[in-house]
Image (cartoon, rainbow, N blue to C red; front, side, top):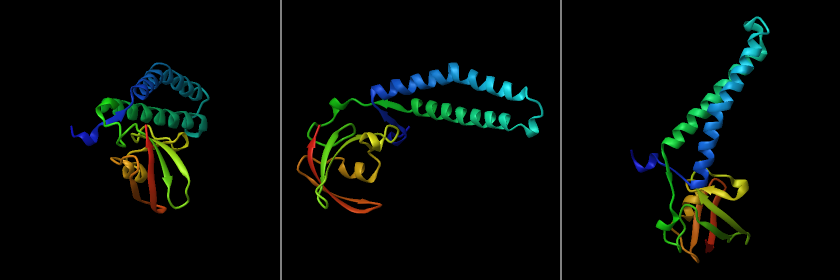
Length: 158
């Protein structure tokens, strides 16, 4: 298996995903099966919108289980002690200044599976995340993004 197939997660995120998968397998499937049985009891399946909706929900549910199993089978827990403390890497919290508008932003660089822009977590595969990797405090980064070229200065790395 090549390194590109691995999914890098924090220990906390790995535990969250494992719990979600167990909850879905243990209680979720029973709940969906009960919905399908109830809808089936309403009669003619060819004109039963409730049954169709329950079957679609089951399909999406099973798809999520499959995706979780795939992610967990390729998961590798990240040990940040392996990385240089003065360089941007996955799990770094980076404070940057946009040199165009002088605004300051703080981002945590994470794997694509953990990305949540609203929480300040950006993927290392995103244009900004990728452009910051390997930089040091004080470095400047020109990053090509869909919105155009972004000029950042790295103010600090935690």
